[in-house]
Image (tube, rainbow, N blue to C red; front, top):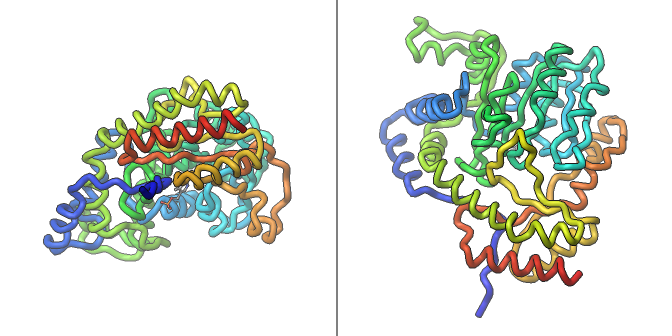
Length: 381
Ligand SMILES: *Cc1c(COP(=O)(O)O)cnc(C)c1O
């Protein structure tokens, strides 16, 4: 019998997606900011108390909106982790900012917030934090620094839906939060994202930038007689087809989370002891943070062992993956004249971290197979 391959990720469908998409299509209003977009906005505003939500076509777009709202000028400096996805950096590079990378903490892949203050100069405009695996950075430290130096804080909360810092939803703490609904995240719309604006000073302008630099959103609400060109902007809003898909997912958010948490917890329960014994690092959740079961990862003692683990899992028809390649070592950053620096924890996670399959439809028997295989590899290495 042929062994079925266990993929790294499988997008989960709740069943209502096509019903809502059909409704959106037949309603005759298919462009953005219609019924389903507003339902999604209301969902997040009610559930997490976000001040202002704007769905976007990706988290990448939400980050780009934040960079425009911050009024980043060429040569402004932005402090961000090196261990992250390219979008975290691109959004600011597109506005001409200079990137100042912070190393990860030794405890988990989040940036080491104790290193931020020493990197601040008179050109620093903002700090971008990434809550890796949906596990919060110490936002008290970040917000305190931001206040003392008058900096803006963007939370790249792409992975952080439903997670908290000291009970506060991630994405609601900095001046801006950016979420992703890419098909690899906990709730999805294929491609999709959301900008959360927490500082009231930026709300009106955010809506204008979102709608190609016009005040059409205010016009739709009947607040003005006609709309016009008010500012720079782009087409950041998704069509109703995408929002309808997302709303079907949001209705099942608690159910999706509870299944993912069960899978995550089983990895933790069954692997923590063997990993500890073999000097393999597993996720650490600080007291101030919660867990949203976005990623379950292992950090092996060296790159060779990590690569062999991925290879052996692959030989057993189990797909595990690694990410991110430290941005401070990327071809692009160095070609642009970026200063090479030694960020040893960031590089260690790049070389030694592996992510295990984690998705709603992962069956118990499949997880049995994954766990058995991992234990076997770890214990006999
Ligand atoms: C997924 C992800 C992004 C990009 O999200 P898109 O919606 O695909 O643009 C950005 N930052 C982090 C940390 C991510 O995990």
